[in-house]
Image 1 (cartoon, rainbow, N blue to C red):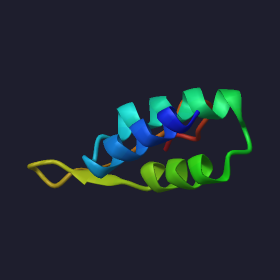
Image 2: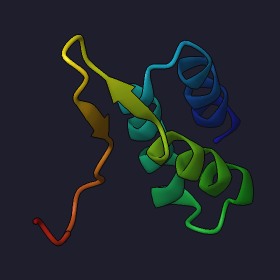
Image 3: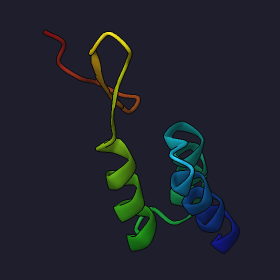
Length: 68
């Protein structure tokens, strides 16, 4: 499990949120209450990216969400 957390932290340091969140999902499937993984996932989900024309994007995790 520490390998998954280390991989997620390394990917997060490179600002690669999607692969990092996939590693965290694997870890949280094994230990749903892992405090450090939950904290890192919340950080990754808060990332915002702005493209070249000024559109801002926010990561939306899989599941239900309200659109509009």
